[in-house]
Length: 323
Image 1 (tube, rainbow, N blue to C red):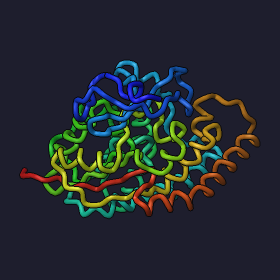
Image 2 (cartoon, rainbow, N blue to C red):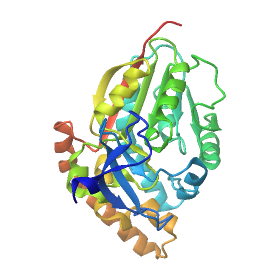
Image 3 (tube, one colour):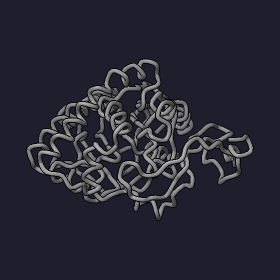
Image 4 (tube, rainbow, N blue to C red):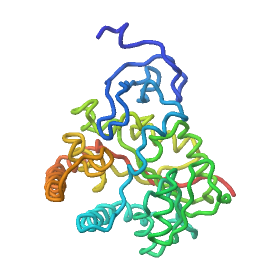
């Protein structure tokens, strides 16, 4: 690829307004197969922000999200075992969030899914609230765990200013057209000294460098902006937060993300969404193979995390400012 081919004029970068980019990769929806369209992963020549091109319009983005792309227990034996596993790996997130020295106030989990994280936080003594763009997910959270949850997204949530001591956003920002607006809205929900915990894939991880467009962290076409740790920190600081802690390893996300990158056809939710026809025995064998692959990925993902190059970045930030 020549320099002239690599640097072409496109719609402006949402961060620095540059119109030039370098094309890094091209790919399609490897995980759910919602579209056969080819998208590009591009890097801004002005600020190095990595994003998808073409950027799906808000009105078309919903077609790339299957109705049940988030996980939900169905009552079966394998489902119960899966839930035990998910609770085990989710404890990593719960410990990180609970360790925040938050002022008095409940926890709001933006993008709460079925509510497993909030249930774990309530078991540690926190009062939880949830929100999710999926009405079904919000209903499951409320029904299963008796945790209030609303259908909606930032900045359009029905909560008063400074209502929460802690707001969490796990794998939310990369899906948004306006992450700056979402962070600003989250800030309004916190008092001075309130905590915000955010997590996104890390666009400077070893997995991305090794796997390119096959890296599951790109999640084409659902991930619109791919943040590095520097990008995320600068976004938070620009929005009036002080970064307090960073973490580059997630037991839930890093090993499973690598396993999914390597063999996406084994990923359990993907198989369910795609409607893969398989017997109970076949399903169990695939689930065990996937679990074994996830376990095999743990050493590498721990190694890249120790080099601050893990495939996810989790940050605790403190809201600055007066009341």
